[in-house]
Image (tube, rainbow, N blue to C red; front, side, top):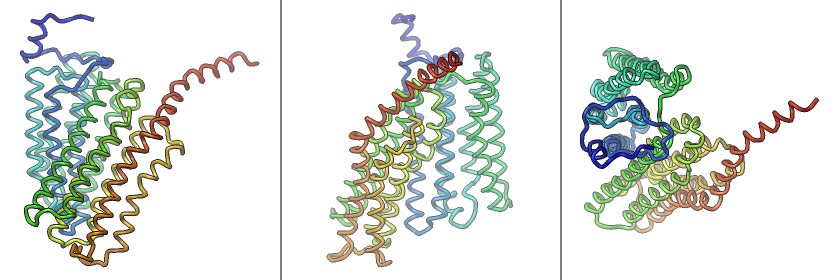
Length: 450
């Protein structure tokens, strides 16, 4: 291994002129996230937060179906653009001037996309498509620099030229498709169908490309760190959003039991979900079995949206307490549903990563869901269909109870993984390590048996 001199090291750190884009080492165990990637991630988390704010507003005014639909559309656009660049940067990021400029242009696209979100949610509320020209313009600006980067990689890494060109062509064709969906006069149903087809095609394309033309040199450990850090930053936005929402509540009404319960729940839920997520040994397992990365990465797309939606649920709870226009059941569902989704997705990520779906892990999973189901049942029983009443003798006790139960599910998730999940993960990993040896013995035995 070559050791760089101090002068060469400083030139690499401080001078960002054009550098060869020949591909990174996919087996480098010390590959880490760069400051440029972290800056890039922050912009996308702001987009998650903006979408969550729009979702919270839609839930508060009763536009649940339209709000959830527009939110899912927004989260897919943001998450997919982020994932595509993360895939490229893991394989080819050389941190030169052109790469840095391309990243900044993509960040501009994210900002444009954010400005299109209010229109998207409003259109969806009126029965129209959540797609709009401003949203698509932002999405295209996020994606076009990646086309140029893939074409550059095709030129400078001849061994993987066909794979890089295929990525560039697929992205370019997809952008034309997204743009065509904004043509005025197309029925809403046709637009939504076209968007679903485009999204499905974009999800499938990377699998087909790398199986047919070969893999680009992405680093499994680096990708695991990138996904983990975006998850972490998104959880940070949950805390920030909770503090902002409760701050507005306290500024209006002063501190109350309900306000304390909501802010405490935000902290406990965020910490619990963080703890549970990082109990999944993603980097260790993916470095050993990099082929498992495909299913693992796709499950993260809804996970990012579910985590941001937890922040939206806490925001709805604060708004519901402040204005007392929502029922107890509405507030409970806004909190319990996204937390349930995160719990399920964390379990699914573990299962996909470990390729273990046996029943010894199911009791732990079900125990996570019990407090969430109990919270909804209590809210449904207590709720009289009227707005929440926080006066003495009203719904305050029930509200604190359901908030506590939702938080408890995250605590059970952590404790369960620490006590049970740890040993189960070890057993699953050891079983997979032994499988090749067992198969070899069977093959040898078959060859010598008459």
